[in-house]
Amino acid sequence: MVTGTNGKTTSARMAETALGNAGLDAFSNRSGANLIGGIACEFIENTSIFMRPKKKWAVIECDEAASRRVFAETRPKAVLVTNLFKDQLDRYGTVTTPRDAIAQGVSATPDTLVCLNADCPMAASIADKVPNKVLWYGLSAGDKLSPESGEESRCPKCGARLEYSYVTYANLGGFRCPKCGARRHDTLVTVSDVLADGCFVISDGGEKTLAECALPGLYNIYNAAGVTALMTAAGVELRHTLKAVSSFECGFGRMEEFALGKAGARMILIKNAAAADQTLETIKSDKSAKSLVFVINDRPADGTDISWLDDADFGALRRMRNLRNVYCTGDRAETMAQRLERECVGCEAISNYAQLLKRLRNEDAFIYILPTYTAMLEMRQELVRRLGGKNFWE
Image 1 (cartoon, rainbow, N blue to C red):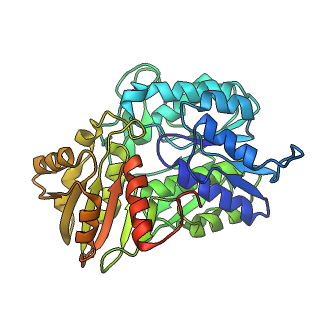
Image 2: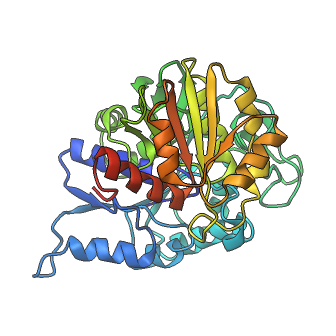
Image 3: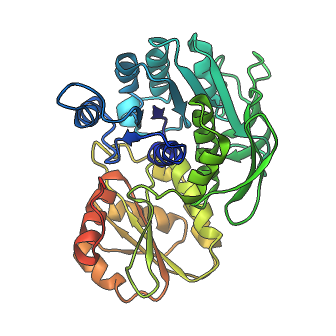
């Protein structure tokens, strides 16, 4: 099982590929249907008329709130928690709500091994609430000194302000609480160095290995580390996991590419401040000509609370080289345009998808499409209809 705020779909795809590399047949909920009904349908689909499983292994991404019941019903061999950030505050209220749901689900199946991100204070605090054995993973260094993205930097146990020896992004890093002594745990799966072009150095308790991630961005290095922990728990050799990390096919809307415009386009899901900041940081490293399209909806599946737009560092657009055009669309196109105007970033709001895509056909620069969840489904459907491509569940 894979749960957490960001990285569920990508991590599940990596894990499914790793199991396949090891010769183990596995299925997953590729459509992203990660609530109880969708997960149940996936298991039914993979059960024969004789009530026997068609495949021995399953890699299932699970919504954080749904994990309370799903884990108890499925009793997984291992659970990966990617991270816990502020997300869908209208639904959860605080980030402790999904944390507690995951902890309750895990506690109901005490033989399940839990893979926790040692760098994430909130995710790490699950260990204090469950009887399960924990396998820790994380990055051993970072180039920042203080948290960002508006993420909570207080201790989940006592509420004191955390101190950091390093920060990788958001509020992830080498934290410690000066009041109660809570701190980052030592890790079994450790990324000790992040190099250029998606390369990184990783260890699963043995020798260090040079690896490469198929997708850019520091957050995908975290996904790779988490999946390495999950596959270690499943008994899969490191070589099979790292082969998957370097070659797996991305999920729909996650770094997915389209033949749009004259230079092409890539769609990257953003649904909270942490995801937006890391995405913009990744785009900033692209020195070629580029245009950005923000597609922002505020429907229940996105989260009706869009205060995360204020927390995200959209000032990063001012620091991007060769940024040609910025467009805003979706239900909250005008809100997004106003947010960018506060950062002195010029943009054009076009609420009609067809009109926008007609404009983008003539873009000379590479196009980055940055949608929220329901906006991703809508925009992707329109792109596939016009340009061809797979359905989102394939």
